[in-house]
Length: 318
Image (cartoon, rainbow, N blue to C red; front, side):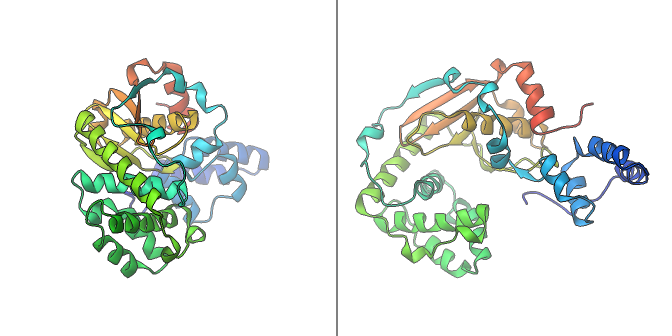
């Protein structure tokens, strides 16, 4: 878990929780527990889990311990907050999807991760920083030395470097989805068309950042902004006035991608990191289409913000 320390129950919450559990009538006891769980903090939720004081039913009913991705997936009608069609669309020079090879022999998710991390490398990140999530994932399958050797071979955008980056992306999926997502990296063999597509998309991404950058920070986390309902999630990068998500996709902007970006924005504003207060736009860059989508946060309705804060992320009302 990102930026997380050993949890503890605050005296006020512990007192209220113990009082609720002393209620003799089961229905009233559950109602009081329900009130306390409706806007529970991240630390309190984890502490109750460690103390085995939460039931599986309560975890499911209140959507506790969700990642941003899971919260987005479980939200019905995600387009009700901001419609994708409301985003400004900007096509950059340098070709689009029609200028890439139409067939790749590698799973699209791995391609997206590789393009993202190679872009970070080509815009100033060290190899260890660019592929830090992959390194963490390799630990889960006892393959740290293999991952380190692959990182050592990533020197730029030569064919071998791109192949190593795609293989490292496997460890990223292990970190996020668990050991069941692992496939032996030696079985990942990108063909020439796939490698060339990755190279072209990275160069497009570098050109995008030359115009809209520089990056202020990447590998975004939201310490202080998480709750017991949204306990994890990491965004892509910030520029001076825009919170960006990086989507390597054959699809146009989707409503779930918009909701994901909205949640990141609200998590950032509630976090300990002051740089999110300077965000004026939410943006998505898709290097496969070479398309930018951008929306001013000032145009987000008060109703949407209230639902995001109190029904999706579940911050306590003041």
